[in-house]
Amino acid sequence: MQYNVIVIGSGPGGYVAAIRAAQLGFKTAIVEKYDTLGGTCLNVGCIPSKALLDSSEHFINAKEHFAEHGIDIPAPKVNIGQMIKRKSDVVKSNVDGIAFLMKKNKIDVHTGVGSFVDKNTIKVTGKDGKETTITTDKVIIATGSKPTPLPFAAFDKKRIISSTEALELKEVPKHLIVIGGGVIGMELGSVYARIGAKVTVVEFLDSLIPTMDGTMGKELSRVAKKLGMDIFLGHKVTAVENTGNEVVVKAEPKNGGNALELKGDYCLVSIGRRPYTDGLGLDKIGIETVKGQIPVDDHLKTKVDNVYAIGDVVRGAMLAHKAEEEGVYVAEQMAGQKPHVNYLLIPGVVYTWPEVASVGYTEEQLKQSGRAYKTGSFPYKALGRARASMDTDGLVKVLADKQTDEILGIHIIGARAADMIAAGVTAMEFRASAEDVARMSHAHPTYMEAVKEACLAATANRPIHI
Ligand SMILES: Cc1cc2nc3c(=O)[nH]c(=O)nc-3n(C[C@H](O)[C@H](O)[C@H](O)COP(=O)(O)OP(=O)(O)OC[C@H]3O[C@@H](n4cnc5c(N)ncnc54)[C@H](O)[C@@H]3O)c2cc1C
Image 1 (tube, rainbow, N blue to C red):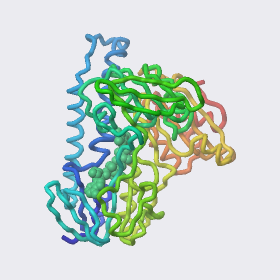
Image 2: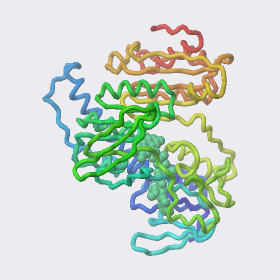
Image 3: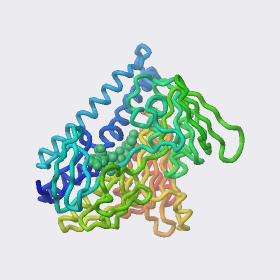
Image 4: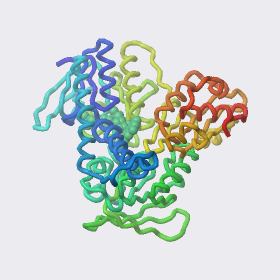
């Protein structure tokens, strides 16, 4: 079997690259070691976590907010089995959708571990050990990432778990200890906090979601505490032990003070993910990883002329939409086009409720770079729309260049932030000033009015509604 393009890995990077390559007329194959397509994102990442987040939001709304809306129902109960089953059904419909897209685009799917024989030959080893050899002009590596374990406590998948197991629990934990207050820890922590678990988050740095603008972390911490979560920032975890029916976590404050000992029934370790290249046979083509990543140039090409790499396995944010953009980029480049990825404008989202969404520079980055900037912010509680839906937690913060007024960053924590951030990306792609956005009509009453008001505050310090 001879192809123009073979893609290894069928996550959002790989399957999108394959579709775009096929659209451009390349004879394309995709190799995936699991039985289902879609990678981390569809099987054990974005989609299942959002399914559980939505279920847990319905539950807490029914439990705590329906009565105020004038809807009287008996006290709702959690059926965790059904919640997990619905999540699995959502995953199935999504992964089946990718299989359909492969057929539609006439992309051959080879199931098994793909490994290099040489730079034009890939061996696919099925679960039964059967080997198939396929050849190609070009290869796109999109093998993704895996959860990073603590160096002193491996995942036992029973009490010391990664996000993968946290999406499959058979009971609501009594006490879930989350190590790492980043995106995954806060999302899954909030799922279980809403459906009745005591949740404690231990984070090494001094802020939650530490890669995002500091204001977002502070506000998220306030909201998480309101939900009943305990948050320990600036704590270094020193030991995690499965003692049978319990897990014991020990941590020390970085800046001195009393050591912490927590006992729970599950410990979710969400300290990050590491690029995954096991079994790929990179040594056969002379590629060496650096800090686990496959080194690539600005065009996502590896040191081997016909081999590219995209997504979580290369540098940059570990996000599905970043992987997708890179997949399209590489395919179009192979077709002689001149594509472009604007890495500054890849938005980041945390799907807690309220959601957090950001694009562009954070205030910390601007301070560090010495760029003169101004800020404008607007609280959700001053929005008519937010009051109508009782979603008054959160704010919008806009950062703009001090001289030119060009928007440099938009940071939102609040209801529907995940969808709103697309408007921020659009504005920034067109290099809008804060005044440009402030002068555009925004439908009333909507959450987006908070963005307009924050832009008014940034451009001329004259918001209307506060
Ligand atoms: C709990 C969780 C929630 C997340 N939520 C979000 C979110 O809301 N939004 C977002 O943007 N991102 C989210 N992410 C991150 C997102 O899932 C990843 O950034 C994305 O999946 C990366 O895509 P990828 O194509 O690079 O790799 P992956 O999706 O990891 O796919 C890689 C694929 O390659 C396969 N593979 C590996 N080696 C081989 C081999 N040798 N042969 C054959 N196949 C191989 C793997 O089996 C896998 O299917 C989340 C992640 C997790 C864990």
